[in-house]
Length: 440
Length: 115
Image (cartoon, rainbow over all chains, first blue to last red):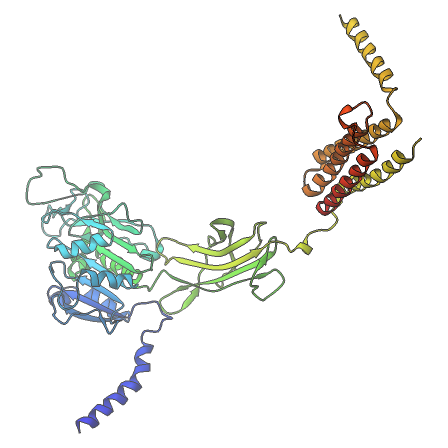
């Protein structure tokens, strides 16, 4: 009986396998399965709007406690998740097989990550953020304080100066969507700064020039280490392998309370019924999970002008056509990507030709140019790195040969006097010999 | 002063001409040949300065054929000159045979480099 059961299970798993593997088709770059790690399961209800919006956009959320002893990101060398949301700021040690190195490996293999810290952040979360290129304030009691751009509370007259109403967004449609975020974003948490050595990390939401990071309940004894707009409230990283990371110092930013709260920035007469948090977080999560800003380049082609086949080699001074197709993922399908700044290089240690590609608005980028008068092993290179978009780095090797000996011009008009002089000298030698030998 | 200089120059040219008229005819023929080769070389250099150095190998072979011819002719002149005691043991026929052989090699190289 037990054996029978086992064989049914085997057949079932074999028939289900193709359906399972369809769910992570490589054609769609959007993440599907997200692991959410929580300090406390009550976050599931206190941040339900954010989680429900992810679910309604088709993500499979797997909630786990961060110290769950069965925690694992991969099984049999395969990752079980496409993205990881760390809503567990106070965790000192992850449960199960998960640790700092495992999370970094997860990102290194091209998966996405959201880190939310707050005032209770552990060294683990802070060192993870440091690995991603941002440094949280080392003082554990420090919060972002701003006596100018704080949010006026509804009931108390004065309001809380650690509740920041931030509206200093990065100007990028790819990161934050086409619709402008009108209302300020509420933020209550700790400050971080970007590591100057890391060129991949970007400040998405920065603090006002008057903000600083200090303990709000004690008197300032020394100048705060982080001040002004060098404080980042929300940062993103796009790694070289196009893995995307979002780091914020406020877990409350995602909470239902902040999503629903009305907001009025101190000193501003305008009161918004709803804070900008929901729009900001939703749009940024679309970017982080590759719903937006993901490019792919296909069909890199080149051929001699007037031919259609790709040659194995070019000759110097050949005319050639180059084309490549670039598409942008819209969340559902691949749409043509239209831009006028895509360039191709013909590269051998340095670019010999740099041409801007023209596009036909259907995703096809094309140009034609002449191979330079230099032979060697060249590469066609398309290096396209734009803020918010995945980076494209294509290269295709192509050798360029010199003229064959019979491909040179035989008689050059400009050289006729030289030919004439040489033959005259020969004739002159002949005549001279006669005259010299036979004169009297 | 100027008058003295022009007078000196006239005297110099006159003495040169009278001395040169004593030169044997065979050497005069060689001189004419050298003059022709140098003239052809100068014309080509001027042409290159105007047109540009594009078929540079052709230019080099054209000019060097003229210069080479002139050099070989001068060598011949030195060897067949009766007043030159250095080559008094060398027969003029031997000198001319050397001249012909060198010219053949020169023009072979020029032909290879011209195209």
